[in-house]
Length: 268
Image (cartoon, rainbow, N blue to C red; front, side, top):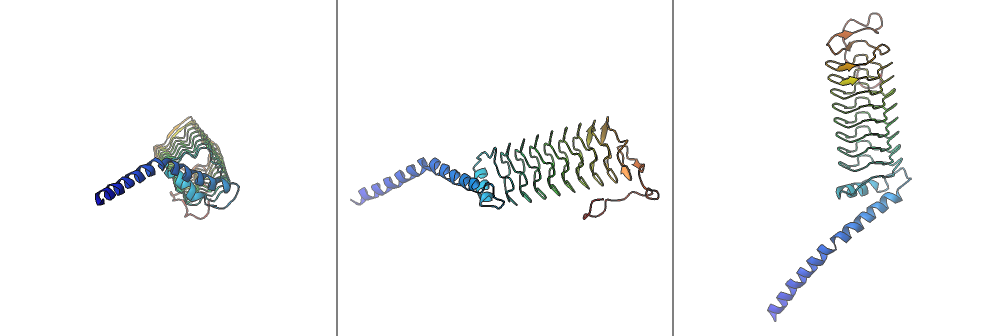
């Protein structure tokens, strides 16, 4: 009798385990359904509304977030590394200090969004809209920003080293003290942009529009300039590709010695 009871107990454990495994997919689907419900219920609201944890859980399970609609959402510090956010609507959203490293954000609308201090290194932002966005101190190193709209964006002290900005629009963008070393800027439009103190050493600028750009104290050492018109750009204490300093547009008496960019706080 005891043997029979022992065997029956073992059998019930095996059956329970099999049932648990078979129902795993159903439980996962239920979990995802609840997460999406949380995201959708918070739509239109400016607060968190539980979206941060819901989105992080979905991304952790490798659920696609294509077409996510969360304009004006507060998503400060959200962890969405490798997330698929293609065609997402994140206009005016607060994504400060977020982790979007290697995320897919092609065709996403991030115009007016706050991304200061965010990590977007190696992210794909092809044709994304970031006009007027706050990208101060953002990490966009090695990011793909091909045909990306960054007009009037604040990129103060942003890290764009090695980024691809082919045909990107940066009209009147603020790139004060930004790191653009080894960036690819083929046919990018930087007209009227503020590049005061920017590091552009080794950057590749072919037919790049720098008309009216502020290049005071910028470093273009070993940068490749082909078909670039600097006639209307402002040059003062600017290091040219050959290592020579240009003081062409310095005020009288302000062209004697090179200077480092002024401390952070205000943009010249």
